[in-house]
Image (cartoon, rainbow, N blue to C red; front, side):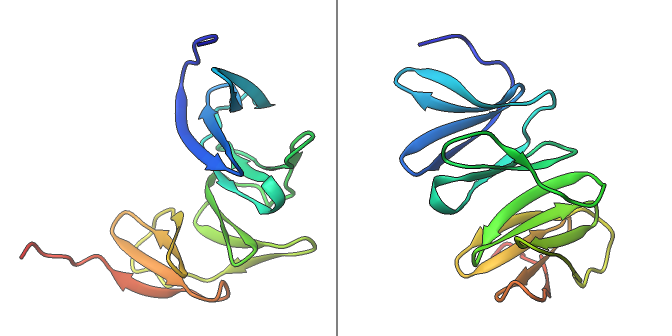
Amino acid sequence: MGKEQNGLRGLLSHAGTLYAYGNGGLFALQGKALVARHASRLPVQGACAGPDGSLYLHTDAQAFHLPAKGKARKLSLPKGPVHSLALFRNHLFVSLGDRVLRVDDDSITSLTIPTPAPGFPCLKVAGDRLWAVFPHHLAFTSDGKSFCFGCINARPA
């Protein structure tokens, strides 16, 4: 099955290819082997599908755009820890420190998230919403421009 890969953190299926990421970078499954698509000194923490077969991926310190063919390009972001990223309504959103940024080709917009407690959001797309998941609460956007607050107050029935 090919060389053993240590420290895999996640899988992503996109454009007919299965990708694995973690220590050493991002790999594509080709036949029975994982082939490096992006080598990284730091572990790749997350990835999401992009347009035209491309991918977005991130380490704790940087985010990249990896076209379907060719090499990854580092995204020009403000300094800070990258927690997660998601593609929503054809825009890339990056959780950077305690902020969520909407990254477009020619601009980066910091979005305000109403939050009752500090924390770093993990971004997830579900249905027609982008969710900012904090340790003890949620916020969401339907338009990619402003977030609404919602609590996790689920009680067993």
